[in-house]
Image 1 (cartoon, helix red, strand yellow):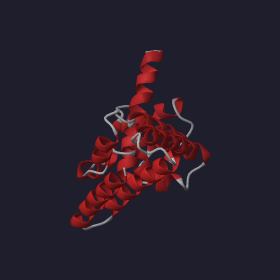
Image 2 (spheres, rainbow, N blue to C red; image 1 turned 180 degrees about the horizontal axis):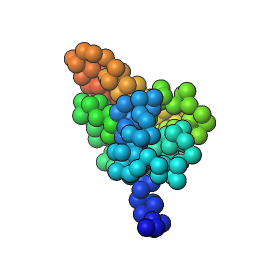
Image 3 (spheres, rainbow, N blue to C red; image 1 turned 90 degrees about the vertical axis):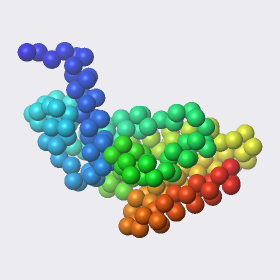
Length: 181
C-alpha cells in the first residue's frame, strides 16, 4: 500500500515530536533511532525515508521543538513566571529545547548548531519585543541578559540535587528579573 504525501508529512511530524521529546528528556546520546521510531508508532526501516542520519534528525527536532515553544503573547511577566516555575523545571521532555539540549548541541555538527542558533536568536527577539516600553536603552542587551538568565536558572535548577535550592534558584531569579524590568 502506497503512503500518501499527507501521511508522509504526518509521519515526519510524529517522528519530530517524539524525537524532540526524547532528546530533551534523555539527551542525544541516550536515545536511539529505533526508540524514536517506536515512540512515533513507526518501523525503524522508515526512518531513512525522512532523515539522512540521527544527526540530521537532531537538527530538525530542535527546529520543530523551538517552533512549538513560541511565546503565548501573555506578556513578559507571565512568561517568566511560567518559564521559571517548578512545573517547567520538572518537565524537561516537554519544556524548553534550548535549555535541555544546549550542552548536547555544542558537540554536534553544523546543522544542529544552526537550528539551535536560529531558535536562540528567535527567542531573544521575542524577549526583546516583550520588554516593557520603559526599557528604552539597550533593549537588545536587556533581552540577551534576560534570556540568558532564564536559561541559566532553568539549567541550574534542573542540575542540583537539593529541591529547596532548586526552588530558590527559580524564585530568586524571577524576583531579580522582576525588579529589573
